[in-house]
Image (cartoon, rainbow, N blue to C red; front, side):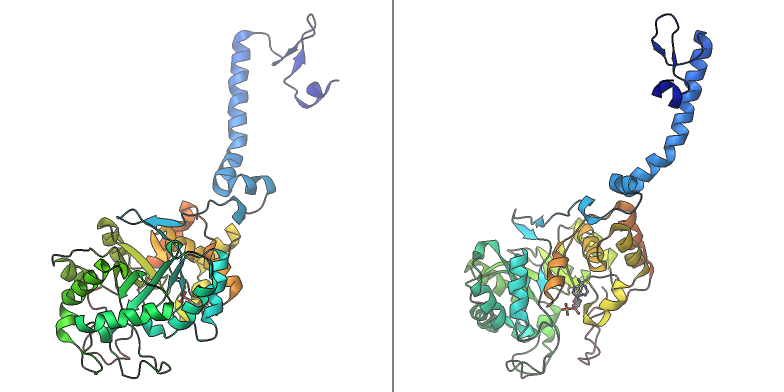
Length: 387
Ligand code: A2P
């Protein structure tokens, strides 16, 4: 008995011609019915395989186990701004990267392929960031450098001096992004000897500048001048809620804000702000994407994050960073650990069902900010009021 006869009982050999026939029955009507039955049987028996291949990917199906990162599509490494410039989707965040560690973090990041560094004057580490940049041979034009105008310098007459100080510490002639910032008082920084408050603050005093807080247009106009001088490429807003964005953009701006940097993570996903920003062509940057030092452990242990991690065989941080990019935001993970810095740049497209599962989990609980300094600053209002 041939192999085909033994293993394919529907195959037979024509006695006269010796040719194989596909069916034992010679009656054409019966043959057709048998053919239909055979097709139905094949369809039903193959359905579970089709389903498995669709849900796990071909690699998973072939190996009877889960998919690994080598089969996942990479996510876009850049976003295109309305100007046509391409801005990297992942930046190294250096908030809370201390002296003696931030320089190495920047060097590691540049070697790993980062081309976007998110810093600020108030982080009190710009000098060390600048020294690390100097040791790299990467041309300025390939880098995206961010700094932030601290609250104390919002008065138009103070802005250029503050910017020049950051430029000099970073060792550059211009910044790619310069943000209107607000942040925390840092007692360890020699140049921050005055107590600071969020939003606009009168120079070297502790008095909240009510006018500039209510209307940041004079600050914006001065920043526009500095764009024209070539010291800033993009003016950016930070921690602006919808009300503050509308308040600012109601003015006749020469340069529109292209980016808004806000806290975005599993605990505070801000779906409404994200939707509105997308509709208005405003790119969001996610600070504290992993939940910052305080909440990172909790973020990495979210059940949905853990289950996607083991399904896709990528790390929990990669799941969260990938999700953030799939939400169309720039992500600013902070790390001073070389292996994590490298890991955080490796982003993969989560299958739609996993992305949606994580999005649903993030937007189903009561939002909880990881970073809210209003109480600590004893402000008469909540900085994020109305967000
Ligand atoms: P470290 O800097 O010691 O590496 P966020 O980006 O939300 O501000 O979170 C920063 C915190 O997350 C830091 O404590 C940082 O630790 C930690 N972190 C950064 N990347 C990873 C990672 N891939 N895995 C685990 N923890 C990480």
